[in-house]
Image 1 (cartoon, rainbow, N blue to C red):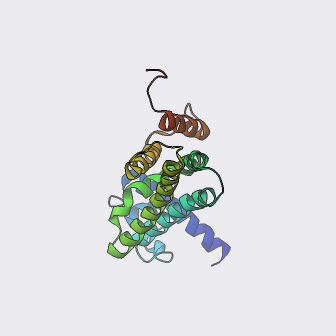
Image 2: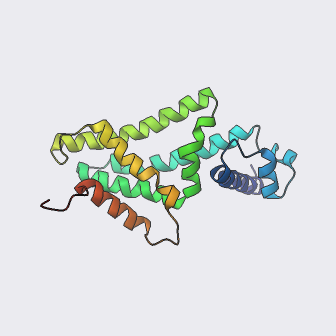
Image 3: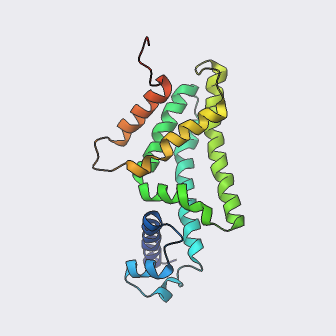
Length: 195
């Protein structure tokens, strides 16, 4: 692929990502993507075979970012609570670095055809298993209370995965502040000390 073709593909993926995030995959047509790029719809087919190929490429890129952020932390020799703290910060950073990418990742995978949906959910489940493994290690080491590790994992992921809905780059909190506050509340709870 030439440099020009690669640059055009990057623009195509970025445009599709923005439209899928704003309108949803089903409500976005190939024509919409072409119009946003100021080209003819037929020209897009020089770069893609189907609209689903765009969705698949976007979802794969998002999953790759989450794993790239998490893997070094999971594989480190850190204690479980420090791993969890760093993983939360890394996950928050991935979401805040690309809120539209996160929106597509969290919502639009349901529109994949069966084989791709199965592959996507397997990757999502593998990521959840990484987080769950840290939680399990924290329970075994005594750093975490003896709790339902599956529910705790879902609570942690759910608390982070909704950030794309409200985070703004010009908002009152930086990604680091969000991660710190989230970690503090998850680790300490909402109860006042001594209450």
